[in-house]
Image (tube, rainbow, N blue to C red):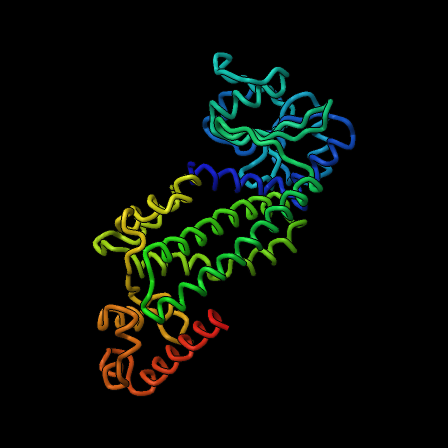
Length: 354
């Protein structure tokens, strides 16, 4: 998956989302039973492909987009779809560029997008279908009702995965307190966090396409994925065997695992430089994850605590004097850390056994 390309697609979908001027103009075209062809962005690559038409250069409104689309040619808008630059232009892309489309409007759109990389939008006169071409990608813009159904289904799946992640995370916390964590325990929690992040990305795609219609789904999404990205990073920091590897590279490797690879604990173990054949072996966390749950404890202090004690059990056994010796701690914060770890231990064990 090309993440840079996905970001580019998302940026264009924002312009096409319900509530935007461009989307309202397209809705007017569909209601009138007409078709349209639009190019987003006036670039050096686009200019040689444009023949004839009129120079307009006026602010874009839904009414103007709909009225100017009555002419047979294409519209050319600026990159933000804020101004209509050209109207009734004829696009002349390279005819030797391969296209899977059959209609004249759609063939021109696909070839123009492939040749220039610019976003090109078509509205089918016969079906009222909106299609976006971007490079060699084709994306059919769905109706709001269909998007809402898919978004709510994805949100329901996300809720189930979040519930399971919370259970697995609570079990891991209890075992960390008892110093009884196995490699498999850590891998399972990391698997769930990464899967949750991926499902959230799918919901995010729907929210982008829904625009102003996706506000409630956005609120639910933000609540469900709160702290997941941080927990994923802290898990890697706690259990990465080869500390010489950069955290950003490990997270990138995890992101690029296929779904099948992610569900294979042996493959996830390899990403963490752990022995995939020794998943039942005990492993001791460094303590980043639990220490981060202590209120008002700065990240720099957590880093120094891990450097000083090495593992979570040693930090939990440390005296006030030993904690106070760490730079940036002092007597008051040492007491706060000790009490915070004690409360976390009690809460984790209570949640597991009661």
